[in-house]
Length: 103
Image (tube, rainbow, N blue to C red; front, side):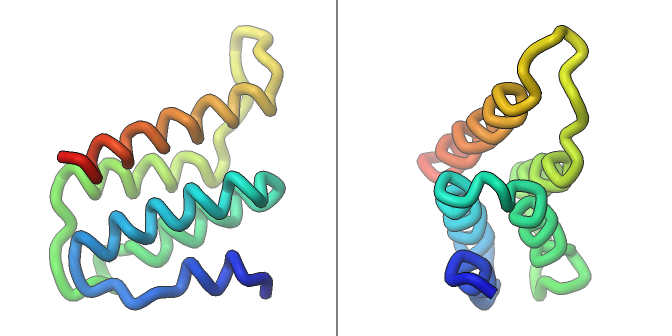
């Protein structure tokens, strides 16, 4: 596995670790866009409630769901270029995670 994959494997013991995983995944996706769906899948799986020793807040659960949706983002209905569409979805998630980090 590549280094990016290994960076997505930190121990998750609290909400701060979840946010750190989200940030790491988003950064990894910036340099490995061809792995977008795999990165989204890995984050979604690693943050499954049954694997955590704490409950995700509603905000973190929604962000987790956003990663889940990016596992298979589908195609745009309006003729937008599929790569641009996927990039826009990831950028939206990036902004949501940054907002959560600050707040």
